[in-house]
Image (cartoon, rainbow, N blue to C red; front, side, top):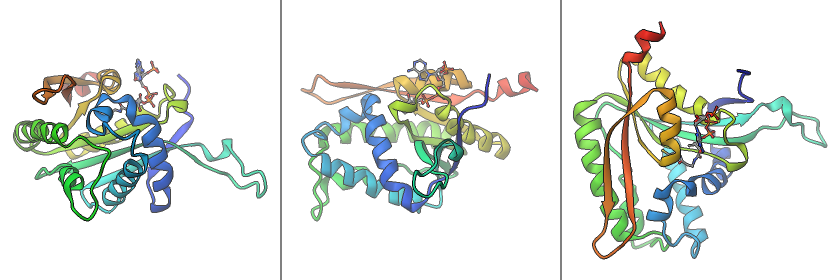
Length: 233
Ligand SMILES: CC(C)(COP(=O)(O)OP(=O)(O)OC[C@H]1O[C@@H](n2cnc3c(N)ncnc32)[C@H](O)[C@@H]1OP(=O)(O)O)[C@@H](O)C(=O)NCCC(=O)NCCS
């Protein structure tokens, strides 16, 4: 197989608008997006601002590693200056949990008085957080108490199936293996195929639902199967 046309590097503050664009082009293919940010089409500015704000928080969170996959610089040159120009095609946020915490700002962003978001569904978000709390308590705080946890991953639709998701996922797998700790994720349907191929196995599928609301969301908890490493050696 030829090497992927992308490389990965840490994200920088000036990348955040492009990362937000990649996110809003790519993440809606994860059913979680429409489930939670149900009104994003009506309030695109609220949605854009939330993600930009969240990414700024992620970038400065010492527990997190924010990575981007970029198209190799030499493939694009600026027409005027001739300088190499990168295009961010995908991003991932990995969190190293020794004591777990997760998306604590999600619900507060929806209800905070000084900035009330209009793009999200408060009941669905509350139900989602309840399930995620269970997942974190059971898996990322108990069963696999030390872990690298993949919080977010998206590839821009124009750049899919070319290895960016693999590179960004493999980074966390390598970190986890080097540190001797576990590696976990809650997978979307598209992520599930990628993570299965990389060696993650399914632990449990949980359902997020709200009374009187027909929409349901599946949360698939996956953990990297380290036993396969000894077979590779
Ligand atoms: C999941 C996602 C990040 C994968 O990104 P990507 O850059 O296309 O991933 P890769 O090119 O590294 O794919 C690697 C492998 O995963 C599997 N895979 C990825 N997307 C797939 C798809 N749509 N259908 C079937 N297999 C798929 C394939 O085995 C693929 O290898 P192949 O192309 O050689 O067959 C991307 O589809 C995406 O952004 N989806 C929407 C957001 C999302 O669901 N994020 C994950 C949240 S947990």
